[in-house]
Length: 165
Image (tube, one colour):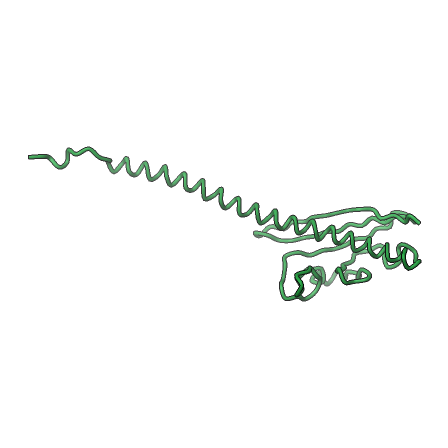
């Protein structure tokens, strides 16, 4: 008669050790996947913030260039201060510090970023600061802020515009 307890196989302790090792490996893989997703989200937002900051600088440059075209002083509508501006605006609008919501950006029906109400909200806000360096140059600072995964981020882009005429 055979003894059923003498068969070769895995003991309960061996099975528990194998399951523990496998679970530790899965935890490592899952944490790597989560970190990758968070990194991808940050990189996407950072790229959008860079483009919005660049657009802010280019909008002020457009005003300067239009002033030249219209034979106006290069800094017309570009006094020192804090502003916001959209792609359809001809001049920047002065920012009221007691109304931070006016800096929030939304997507319009054409998926362009705008200040003010739009059908799609975004986490981004943009502030354009103009500083007069001297009679022939302006410092433009375009600051984009956003929140992601309960963290706040900022992207600042700075340039100097000159009166070449």
